[in-house]
Image (cartoon, rainbow, N blue to C red; front, side, top):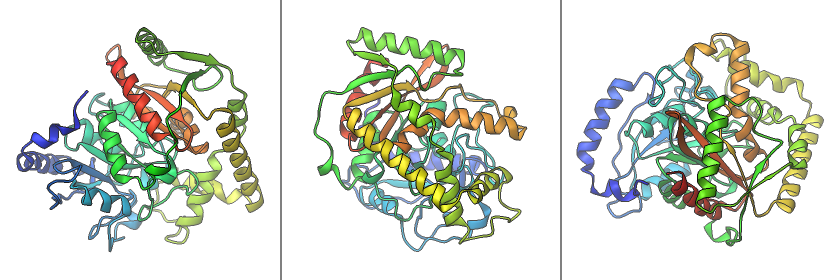
Length: 414
């Protein structure tokens, strides 16, 4: 494990000079708008740490484009709440990172600003939607990447790039000043190289630590009827090896068929992003604009076919599922592969059919945490020289307990 205090002993000026050179070289793919802003706070919890900012967040004086050229002139008059907290904690900010347009996919492709190559799997996608953020941490440019997670947008790129990605409970971090995809599912979180750094960043960002659930024994459960179909062979074999490591370190894991997941599978979860993104962005620009990525446009326009009554019924079904989850699994942590596949090659996305199939596969396991309003973390491990993620998901408000357990598992995997 890398101690987060490592940046305290680093020559910040020297590091930022290196970062500046890297930004110049990678501007076209990793960053949408590069900038370096050094904090004046010298004794904060993040003093000396470098944080990259997903282009969904407002940073005063800069354009928060959300990865689309349609909002490239959207100049922020003030910082997003999360960005302001990072500044106040002493963090140095290094630019708006690239992302899927409007955060609407799990693969990270962007036809306007390019897509960064995966630093640990050359020729492969970095995952998304927080693609540029993952690359800044994987390449050592940033210590922390601030991002959003609507259906896996922190955990998918973390799994693909060998990082830790933390999606906290939605209510624990303010989304003020952040462009939305789905008001129902969006969460603000972080990626870093280890759990300790994610926890440190979350402690800076969260506003309701006092209301967090008290520690209680957590039961690790591998759901036998969800998350394991259509896995790449190395994901299947690697997950089994990871479980063996955990068991050898005394970690008890149960394997269960759970009817909760059958109910979840019947829920049309695509409606949340389609309906809510359409509702928001049609106020800002024409959804028929030719500048909009056709693949993003197609997903947003699906919301046109969902009536208000149908969407209200879907929301009610989700609320019932959340209530059931909290009643039946208050102290359960679900354990499964973060993503069903290894990082796909860029050339696998040439057809729309392949894009849709791979995108859905990437999002399948991670989206569950957003729909049940939980907290979730992806931990990196490798098998056969391939990076992949092990995902832990718990009930809303269990963030501290989840992070504590994640540290135990992180140690066992190492």
